[in-house]
Image (cartoon, rainbow, N blue to C red; front, side):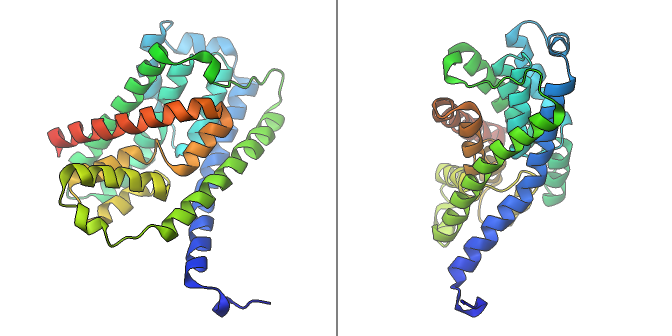
Length: 287
């Protein structure tokens, strides 16, 4: 039997990060699954046709703004968006909600304000940049996205319990896959080179954007990590905060498992490029 002292520090760090990611994300995933199941079981499809504008181009920004009222991280947004699609919401609007909800909900904004007490504009910049990315991504998918690339699961005649059990088992497996990858990268990626690139503005933005993808930190906690990266500019930190809730390893795995790999390989790069570009522009103006 191997004792704790015989386990290498790297393995202990890997295990700690993996468990932390899953423990941090599972409550929000369960919350999102519960909301999705409730949508499938209790909300009539006609509700969404009344709640959102009939024109898809107008439904996208309305759905993006609606993301501000749901406290949940990116793990919760995927099953909720899937539930919205299954009830007849245009995919572009559901995708705008998927991107905005984990980035501009009240819990995240309050956490950002606490993490950046001397930079109140960071909250404004995060809200504006994240909402803009969500809406533009939704509009682009509405214009160029192919319906056949997006798997939309239907929940006809499913009870709340049945729908929740199915979605939790389905999404939970992909969360574990993403957690494994994130923990591995957290251990193997060197940290000392970050300071060297912090002084190059565009490189710093890209590096923190990629770091947000690799670290896969829940959106309720990422502001505190961003604030600790003191070597980087406010705009680079903004990119970290905008990219993370929209593109990270566990979210990529969840999207691929829920909506299909063909969708994920197109939507993920689109979202990443938009998030980096918009963060640079908004950060340059406000920060």
